[in-house]
Image 1 (cartoon, helix red, strand yellow):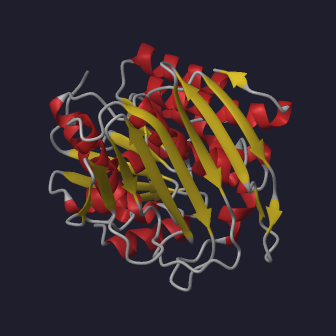
Image 2: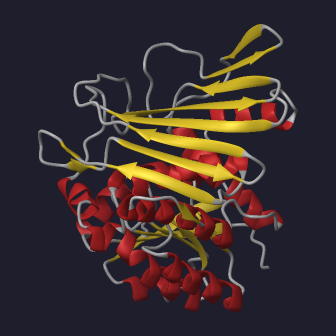
Length: 356
């Protein structure tokens, strides 16, 4: 696989989330954002000015960006139904590709993208940031060191609410997420759920059976959340997990991003680890705690802003491109997490457990 030194990046989509994707590219002296593509060029120009870019190429034509020889890598940050065609076009153009999660609307579409990337031999990854969130990285390091023995179960709690400090979400970004033909599934169990299933996969491996209950709640602004939901999964070796999603409309939490918090508990044969923060936080709890041998240890010396998960994800990917390291997530891994996520939606529709 081709390796890189100076990496020149083109952004395909410059919506709200692009600010977080841009941080590390703007900080790395050997990376440069050279092109922006958006159906609203005015928005792209606004981002270029905000990021302090030096005369980038700006267009609303994907093909025009992909034709440019000064673009090595593309960040595809589009609504889900556009992922497949944009990724296939970028792969055909020979660009390295970082594709926002979930990678496609279906596993069948994901198969097509993964096969195209493999045949073309271009560097391809599915973007995932939660496994690069510093508290998650700390918990994983502790578990890999044997801190809780063999992991037996994982419990993940995702809790949207409200926040006076959250960022503004553009109406258009909310609208397409309510259309299953464009989103592929619910905003919490399928879209944001991809992160949660990635966490389960990261700590426990791929599940082999899923049983999901997914209901719906309408917020005061008319946005429909696929919550409350309870999704249980079984891993090989008599190990289990669950994802609980609750929309608490009057729950006030602190965040600078989405009004949501996430918590994780992993129980092993010798101890328990808690990850107490995610998008935001509920009070001043330590980001990571470990209970073992009758003692509770708190770990606090780490960055806990959600933006750091994006920074570390991009930082690792740039290093992987330059040094030929394995990607996180590879296309195959992104497809398997999509399979995990899609199976939960299928289980809820069928009203029974479904094997992966």
